Amino acid sequence: MISALLKRPRRNRKSPAIRSLIQESRLHPHDLVAPLFVVEGQKVHREVKSLPDVFHLSLDQLLLECHNLAEHDIQTVLLFPVIDPSLKDEKGSYALQADNLLHRAISSIKSHFPKMTVMVDVALDPYTSHGHDGLINEEFEVLNDPTVEVLQEMACLLAEAGADVVAPSDMMDGRIKAIRAALDESNFIEVSTLSYAAKYASAFYGPFRNAVGSSNLVGDKCGYQMNPANVKEALLEAKLDEEEGADMLLIKPGLPYLDVLAKVKEQTNLPVGIYQVSGEYAQLHLAAKANLMQFEKGLMETLTAMKRAGADFIISYGSLQAAKLLNDTPF
Image (cartoon, rainbow, N blue to C red):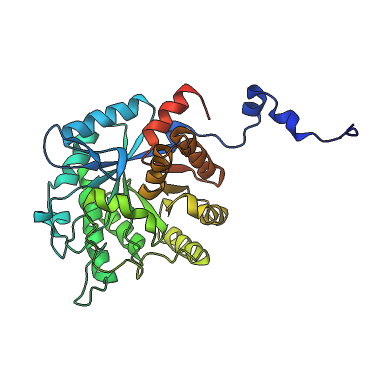
């Protein structure tokens, strides 16, 4: 016989009702941001080969997807353009062309869904022939300050198109202060900045680069994206971005960097999000395809872990699947 125990933690796990009553971390569809890939054309709804259940969407299909997301209580999208290779050059010039694909996508969404929050990626890699996030020199080194000047102009054009949040993902030094100044000077004082404060040079971005057509990268991005071995560096980057005027901070990738998320969350009063990137999402699908796990349970467990670690919002390619599950049974 087991002697009388004063503490039996299992009593708090004995029924679904009790488990739900004392659950510490909860997901809601409003916590989720859906990344969307927009392409030219009509009636294009083409699955991305490296990302199951993720699609290249023409503008008409993009609106249908936004309607579907709104029906499942997702209020925010993050847009990425898929640019025709013929429009790419070393300087990413198409990014600064009025009425380009991304500008039209923003305007269309805001016209049809004015209450939906539209976040837009601010970086040159979808537009450059070399696949880097900025301007380069002859040695393929990414140039910080000239790139920041381009990002300022990009941010203002995106704001003019109707973006609610501009999200610089380039990891150039000083770009938050510069973009904030440019937005304010152009009277876009209500447009928010979401800083990719700690974006690591990760192996988990592969499917995304295939999706946007930037997998022809010359060299690597280790000169501006962060070393996966470092966390103090992330705290410094987050602190600097907060001082420069960022409204929100983002950690990328997600699950491998929950410690970074938790530490950044401890030092800031700003909202902090996390990005469950393409490689993480694809892994769940591949494991499920091999009958090693159930995709839905794996998705919800990883998203809940991000919420538990301190995420105020989560960008995930599984946002719609998660929202459907949450609307059926809160997790």
